[in-house]
Length: 171
Image 1: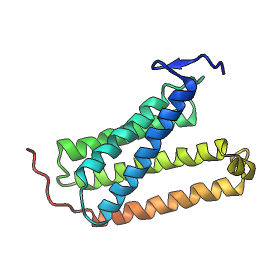
Image 2: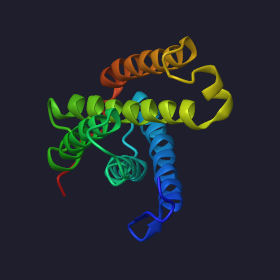
Image 3: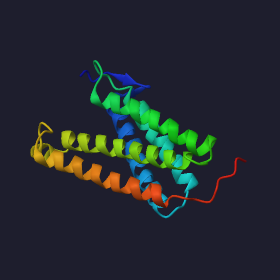
């Protein structure tokens, strides 16, 4: 890939670093939000940070030069839809009725997608991990992804059961 590619006025290298930083902030804030869900607490500021950075992760991911539809693009589209549902559930419908569990499920799934891609990228870019699974079909990669999926399924089940925050007023 040519090194003179510019995205949003940044070199591809700088844009990639910004994208990764946004992704890491999304994952870290998402984990804090998930912990809050388990404690039946709505952490408003961290939740806003999670939703914004996770949405930005997907949106900036679409700007990378690519040819055709990739698995990352498909995951990004699904993630955007999930995040829009979570945003509507929280800020428009104020977690009323079914919107509470819709918010939880969509948020946890969006977080898992972000972690899924983080694991993929880690196995591609970090030399010791790449050596363990150079084609990402090897057991270490599959185990990492399966373990992450299992953790997020359990987290999602417990979050749906426990997340009953104080009702949000519309004002």
